[in-house]
Length: 136
Length: 79
Image 1 (tube, rainbow over the protein chains, first blue to last red):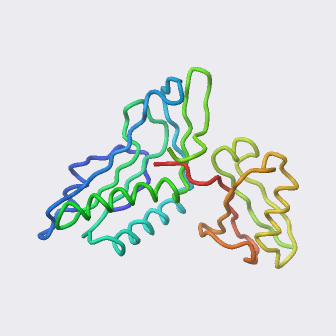
Image 2: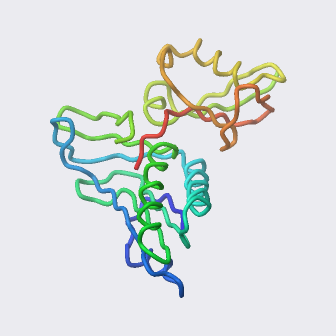
């Protein structure tokens, strides 16, 4: 499952799409809007994507992960739009027969998403808005 | 001559605008467009940005065609 969306997601729903007869473990990474960064309060995060390219890149990352690790499937959902502190931004899930490969794949996938997907974040602080220029 | 559309994203869009149409010579490459854009927009000077054509990343030697949509965007910053 690959999705770039304004809408929030349900971890249970994603889990149910990844549960098959051979699935013994599903590892999730959930990124949420931090309320404080670099010494300033962050009230909101504005997430923008070059949508068609972002969806294609996320699918490429998912396929790369399926080749690289002994996992059964993976899901990546990235939200766009204005998100408040503590709201969900990104979900990565990797399913496998056992936990070790699922942990490795999940960690690798989120690093690749941060490095490769054409998605950008802008923080809203009391002193104005600022782009997050490097993946954090 | 041919027309191509250039679309900007994230902080580049805020500085330059959402999109513009350029008239360029037939057979113009992506590399030539990058030079042209750097010449037109001082905000791009010294900045690192990426290019895609019709949603696909391309190399600088790729030739453009009439009606192509060139996307100009910063390196990834999501997640």
